[in-house]
Image (cartoon, rainbow, N blue to C red; front, side, top):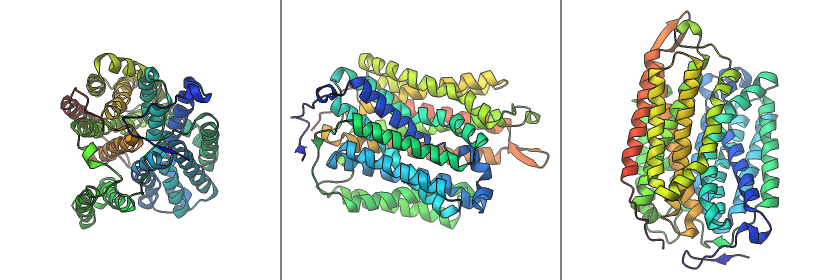
Length: 478
C-alpha cells in the first residue's frame, strides 16, 4: 500500500520517526554506494590476462569491461523511474540482487559469454547511487540532507578510487574468481543492511511504466556508447562506427518526440530542459570527462617502466595504493562541499570543484618526476571531484519535484557516465597515437600524457563555463 503525493503536500516522515537514526541511514547508503561503484574497477587488475583466462581475443575480452558501462548507463534512469513509482528501497534491493547474481555468474564460469552476462548484471546495480540520494531526501531531517547527499554522491568516485588497490590485492594473491565471490559477499551484506535499516519511502508517483521510452533510450544510449568505446578499435571513420552514431542520433530524436507526448514519461524532458537541470547535467558530463583522465593516465604513469624516462615501475598493487588517498580525500571533502553549498550555493561549489580539477592536472603537467608528485596531483584532482560531485544533487534537487527525485538523479548519474565514457575514448586515442618504442613494446610517450592532461584541463574549463550558465535562483517546483 502506498500513497500518492505531490511536491506541494509532502512532509516526509524522517528516519528517526521510524526507529532508524540518520547516522545509520547515511552510513548504510554510503556503504552501498561505495560497493556498487567498486564494480567499475573490479576487473582492471586482470584486464591484460583476460584473453588467456577466457580463451578469447583481446578485442572480445574488452566487452567484459564495456558491458558493465553499457548496462549501468541503460539501467540508471530506468531504476530511478521505477523507484519513484514502486518504492526506492524495493528497487535498491533489486539492484543489489542483480549485482549478487552477476557476481556469482562471473565467479562460476571461465568463458566469455557468462562473464559478459555477469558483468552486465553488475553494471545494472549502479542505479543504487541515485536511488540512495533520493532516499536521503525523503527520509532525513532537512538540516542533514545536504551533507548526506554530498557523501552519497561522492561514493561514485570514492568506490572507483579505492577499488583499484582492493581488486589488485585480491587478484595478486588469489584466484581471479575470488574477485567476484568477494563482490557477491559485499552485495549480500549491503542487501541485508538496506533491508534492516533503510525504511521504504512513502513518496511515490503511481503511473504506468513507460516501456516505449525505456526501449528508445536504451537503443539510443547503447549505440552511442558502443560507438564511443569501440571507435578506436574499429576505426572512427568506419562504416560500423558512423552507422552506430547515425542510429543513436535518430533514436534520440525519435525518443524525445515520443517522450514529449507521454503523460508519464521515463524522463520528463520539460523538467530536464529547465536551465538549472540542463546546465547541471551538461556540467556533469564535463566533470565526468575530466575525472576519467586521472583514472586512465595516473596508474599507467606509475606502472610504466623506469626505462621510459618518465615511469616508476610500480606494481598494480603499489600503483593502486598510491591512488587510494584520492578516494579518502574525496569522501572527506563531501561534507565540506555540503557546508559550502549551504553558505554560498551549490553553483559556486560546482565551479570551485571544476577549477580544482583543472589545477590538479596542471600540477601533473608541471611536476611528474616522482611518485609523490603524481600522488599529490591525484589528491588535488580527487578533491575537486569530491567538491563537484557533491554539489550536483543539491542543484538537481532544487529544481525538480520531490516525486521525480530518483529519476532526476538517475539522469544526472547517466550524464556523468557519458562523460567518463567519452573521456576513455578520447584519451585512449591520444595515448595510443602519441607513443614511444621501448624494445619490443610500444608505450605512451611523455608528450602523450601531457596532451591527455591538457584535454582534461579543457574539460574542467568547459565545466566552469557551463556552471556559470546555471541560474542562481531556484526554479519553481511543481
